[in-house]
Length: 133
Image 1 (cartoon, rainbow, N blue to C red):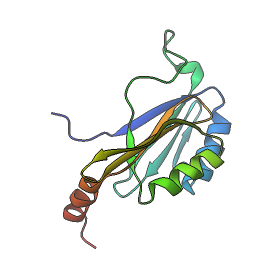
Image 2: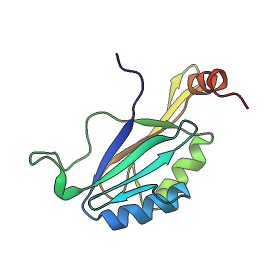
Image 3: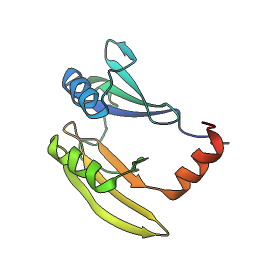
């Protein structure tokens, strides 16, 4: 039924600032840009990170971080966390050992979105079996 996420969507009151911030963080420009929306292709499987102008958020959307966190696999969790903090993100969840090699952390980006990062051995195992070099 659920086969994998297609697009993670964040809202930003200042879409242009979010575009610049995420382009700098990811080292790429968005591949898709239309008024009120930008989208980046991220990572090994080219997952989509969409950023929507905050004017289009549902009227009763919470303004504080909460709810589900999408965790992106990273190769160096501590270095990635430090990079995010250096770029103005605020720590939301400190580095936390989850057991069996799983380690997580999360930040709130400058636009109020929770961005999770994770060292995930299962991701690497799946990736090794999916992508042939």
